[in-house]
Image (cartoon, rainbow, N blue to C red; front, side, top):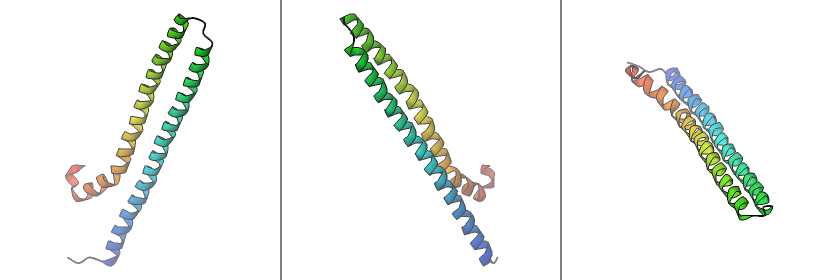
Length: 113
């Protein structure tokens, strides 16, 4: 069996294109994750600022405890929701990053498809 230079070049070109496409997808995934962290941080800061303003205006201990409880509940709910969103982004990133590996493995092992 003899290999042609063109076949070898096409094989290399195909894998190079897959790597470039994968790198681009990973870059977009990382940007989405960074953006989600930034949005979460900004929302957290704004919520804390709003809480401090609200707390500074209370006149009784009952209202202060009520404001603190409301802030803690809201902060926890926001944290859980944003954590799930970010975890989903990481999952999508992992799937995207391993897509070229799946393609290469499928070529060598046709029964894996």
